[in-house]
Image (cartoon, rainbow, N blue to C red; front, side, top):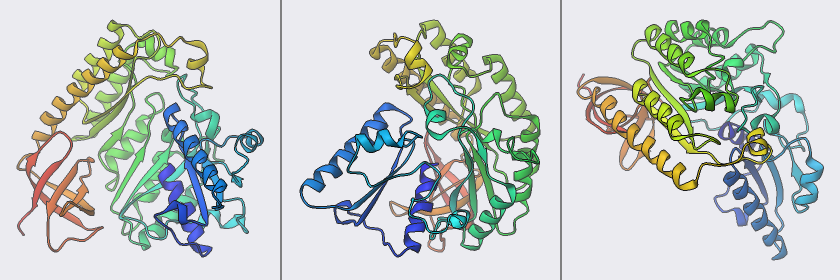
Amino acid sequence: MNKAESERIGSYLEERGYQPTAKADQADLIVVNSCVVRQNAENKVINRLNLFKSWQKEGHHPTLAVTGCLVNSQTDQLKERFPHVDYFFKPGDYPPWLENKDRQAAILPRHPSPSTFVPIIQGCDNFCTYCIVPYRRGREKSRPIAEIVSEVEELVRRGVKEVTLLGQNVDSYGHDLPDKADLADLLGELDGIPGLARIRFLTNHPKDMSPRLIQAVASRDKVCEHITLPVQSGSDKILEAMGRGYTAEHYRQLVAEIRRRIPGVSLSTDVIVGFPSESPADFRQTFDLLSELRFDTVHVAAYSPRPGTYAADHYPDNVPATEKKARLAEVEQLQERIAIENNAQLLGKTVEVLVEGEKGGKWQGRTRTDKLVFFRDSEASPGELRKIRIERTGPWSLQGEVEAK
């Protein structure tokens, strides 16, 4: 979400005559787009702002603006805390000196990559006990379908081949719109756009992912067979403490239904280890669930209290740091083994890859199932779809050759 918003802010500034610079100490204007989902991330933002303050003491006075999740409704407190910052504006908004606010919907990345992000819903109504996002980004607010379709059509005219629809809880899209259109409806509209090759969306919430949405993924040609479905824990006790709204068995049934309806689908998930009161038995339930369901990707993090959340205010952080680290390492080792085995099944097979760019002398891109592939091709260019025969596999990426015509 921050990446998408940064692209749009940058495009707005370029329209106003600004040019990007790689050196912040030479800039006339600096926009800090903050992520504060974890305390460490917020600390980095604060340290950066303090650095800019030291520049001012040395005589360098760029205009300084801050947006992102650091900025909530209490901007007066932020102005008092950071008096050297010229502007604060909420995430998803545009710089406050925008002359015509009606132009906001038209501001798109000026130089989009073949694959780009499109925010479709802001905020979150779930209030998971460990998460700061609802307090910083506010309640859910969906964009109208017509506005999103118009944006994607323009992006396609600029060369975009793949869009990823974004929301803190993308499954809630549309519930606040007058016509109650949902994400399945939006996927149907976007699927008909000529020139668009692929559609993705994230992040899903297990309690909100509907059979209708699963069917839309299964039936729409351009919607990729890849779903991000954070489980967070395999223990019902911990899931309840997290306020997730589902049980481990409900999650298992949902995964089984997704795999039944969408053959060949790849699944990724998120896991938090060391949540308050997580016992060795609770962790083993999470480990067993991951072993059983065999995800393609697992993003794992050790719990750390986030000031301002329910968990930080009401639950003691009573799992030792050494135990959190050990549990995290155990999940990472498990997932590496699973990823090696999953990816090995692609050896010798031909996959469709959307070329995104070059790295290390090779082209790189992703399959419809979100597998990262590297290959050599003197005739390739970003935005093209290439048929690649997989010659080598590993846990995190695949190596291949262009299929002979």
